[in-house]
Image (cartoon, rainbow, N blue to C red; front, side, top):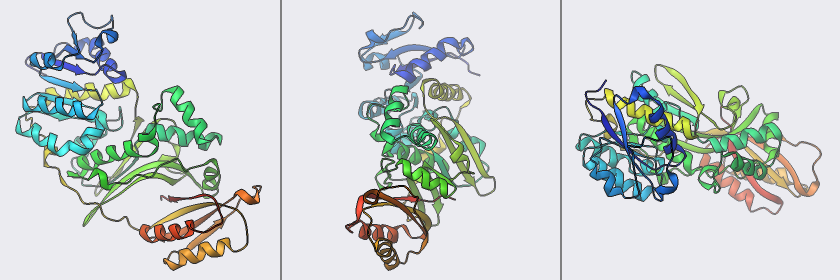
Length: 419
C-alpha cells in the first residue's frame, strides 16, 4: 500500500487517544506502513502505559512534536483554540491531519480544508460524526454516484440514551441523565448534548460532506430535550409515536432547511427502534433513495476505529487535493409546513381549549385533535393538542400568545411530528 513507513504523532491521550494508540500497537499489520513516534499530552507523566512501545516519545511540549517532522498528526485533544492552532500549523507544513474535533470543524472547516488543499495535505474527520459509523466515507464514496437531497438522523448518543430509556421505563429525565453520567454515556456537564449544540456541529459537517456547502453554525438554533417529560411519551404512544432527538438538513432551491431537537417519530420507524446510545443516520438521494447508517455513535474504541480507518485511507490517497475544499457558504431557509404536537399542563378551568383554539386560529393554524388522559389533578392537568401542517413562524406566534395566558402550571411544549 505504501512505499515507506509514515511517522504518526498523537495529540491527546484521553479515552479515544488511548484507544487509537492501543489499536496501532496491537495491529502488527499496520507497522509496515505507520509508526507512532510521539504522544503529546499535558501532564503526560500520569498518562504513560506499559503496553505502549518503548520507542514512543511522551511529551508535553508541542514544539518537540513538530520538530520530529511527522507525516501525520492525529488531533484528539478536543479543545478548540489550541487544537485549531496545531492543526493549522500542521497543514501549513503539508502534514496530513486526522481529527475528531467537531466543534472546531463546524466553524472552521472551509478555512482548514482550503489550507489543506493549498499545501497538498489531507484533512480527515470521519470520527467527528457518528463515532464508529463510516458516514463521511459512506457519503463521499459509497454514494458518490447519487445526488443527496436530505440527511436526517439521531446524531447524539446521550440524548438517544436518555429519551429511549424514558420511553421504556417512564423514569424522569433527571434520574435517567444521572444514570447516563454514571455509565459514561453523558458528560458531567451534559449541556452541549441535551441542548443540541453537539448535534448542530455534526449536522454542519454532514451538510458540508453531502452538499459541499458550509452552513453557518450560529444560524442553526437547536431545541433542548429538557422540556420533555414522562407524560409526553404516554401521549406520543397514543398517537403511535415516540420521541427522539433528530437532526435534519434538506436542500431547497434557495438554500437549506434545518432542524435539531426532540420530535415525535412513528413507532414503525427505524428511529423509534434505535435505542441506547446508538446513532442512526439516513441519507435521501435523488436516485438511490434512502440509505441508513447505524451503529455506536460514541465511545473510545468505536471512535478510535474511525480514526485509524482515516489513517489507513491516507495510504490510498495520492492526489491530496480534497474535494471538500470546494465547500461554499450555505443559506438557511424556513422549513416547509409540518404537523406539530403541543402539550399543556394547566390549572383547569372553563374556556382553556377555546382560548388555545382562538390563538391558533388567529395565525391560520388548525387543530387536528385534542387528547386528555384521565387520572391527573386539576391543578396540574396535562393535555395535548395536535395541529395540522402549518408554517413554523405562525405556530411560534400562536404559542407565544398562548404562553401569556394565566392558566399554565408549566411551560407548554411544542414538538414537530415527523412522518
